[in-house]
Length: 97
Image (tube, rainbow, N blue to C red):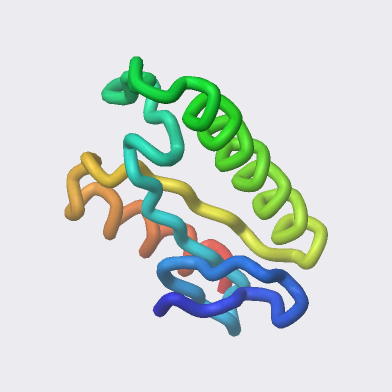
């Protein structure tokens, strides 16, 4: 938990299955701009707009780096059902085995 899937990658995943090469991220609705719940703050948009855009860009870069290294990157939103997420993770780990 909270580990770097790839040692050189300066990002941590919430859960990493190293032998199966599966990295799981649970993204917060605010910081990662969930299409269902995110509302851009009206205060200080000069800070928040680029900040949220950088977060999204970094997520895409991390996913690409993981794919290049042979990993499956799974991303879920914090509001998703933990039972549904657990089943999705289980299926991906078993498929990677």
